[in-house]
Length: 221
Image (cartoon, rainbow, N blue to C red; front, side):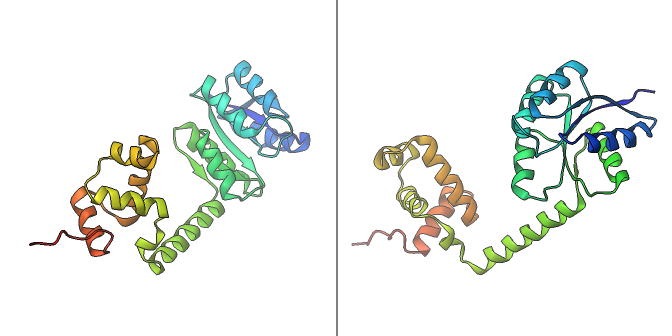
């Protein structure tokens, strides 16, 4: 039987020992290495070539996010699961940005961790139910907030300026020159304002600008 090879990266020795004992009881898993900080995690990952790295967030020294980024760069096939006490959305987002496949809280049931490792090993991803519930609540809150505020009021002053110039027929390059911005910056403003207003083409953009009196129709003689 091919076993799932696991590297433990946590600065608490007793915690690592507990996880090691838990994994040893599973016939399809084995711990192939341990690390107590981010730098060690990188070195052990390159040395032992694990399938999964269980990565703590609060280790001293090199950031766990940077360690994860370097591990994923050197070994894209290695999966990283953050195992942490922090039910923090910012940490979760940072973890996903550097390529983590899972985020599990340390107070989760043991079998939840085992199930998460198997899911991730098979190519899936895993999020602790509490974190998932928190994200859903936050998403619902944002939807309600968006519904209360007219979409036009969510535009920044710069986005309104770009909207006006676009509706007047200027190209992105012309707007960039006029506002002394890069083309990429203007493209970003254009994308954001069209996303916020749920507009998908130039005709809709011009129509919106006319309705909101951002631009005026030319007077007929």
